[in-house]
Image (cartoon, rainbow, N blue to C red; front, top):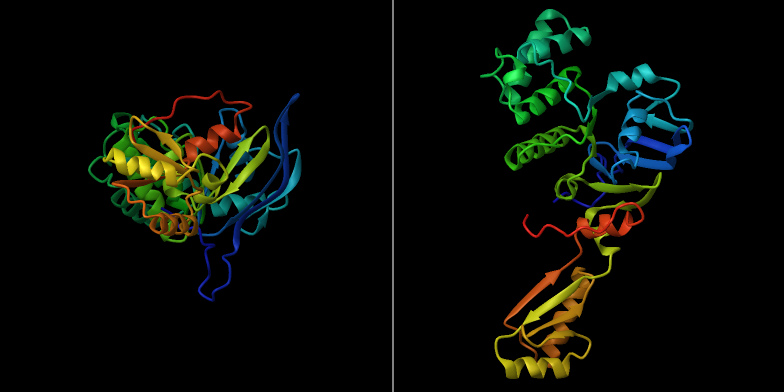
Length: 330
């Protein structure tokens, strides 16, 4: 899990911001997509933007990557004002959109060399960078094959490799693992973690809540044009009620004694279990354990349940997303 601590520089100061935005607004006709969005994303971190379909996640990416203009508001990317220095922003970033930019009619290597030409790299430098990135993304064996023959995971790896040709320090990944199988998705996660370990800042949009939970240092939920919540995954989970400690007993007599003692607990007489409300923090868990010791209650099994990002997502976007059954398998 990513750390919830603010990234620090080598001098111990907070890491500088890679992306800031204040009051971003964007409307298409009468539909307001972004309505006063503020962002502050430290360098060298993964920031995940969540939201239902149509919430404006891709619009936010397009604005911050200079592909479309905001109607109002200010933003700075890589230290450059978005409206005054769009070319400087473009030179500092890489963008991998929802749909692959790979040309299936040419080989993977040719796709990379084409990108090197677009970045005006000298021929020798372009070939060196291409070879290094193809090796880094485990694509050397397929380098001479048409990209149309690549699997979905290979195309996505090539897509990101092409994004890295210009050595960007900020990368926008707009739903990078959509449609990938679980193994390919985990491979992409490893690639993203490696990028951040090298100091790259990643702005990620995703429909996979587990993906945000696994990768993001901070998460924002976009709904109705507004950021309705922001924080670490753990901070967001603590905003949602429903956390509890579950005590399971095998001996009915012990269970009945616990029921009489722990009157704040919710009981299940068939399963011989009790649930004690808990926010899941370490301090609260320690207090409950001390209380159990003082009452002499000894359960055969103790488990802690805290709301997950599915709970957070549905609670915060309930006005636009109908409740759905949660997946039980992870």
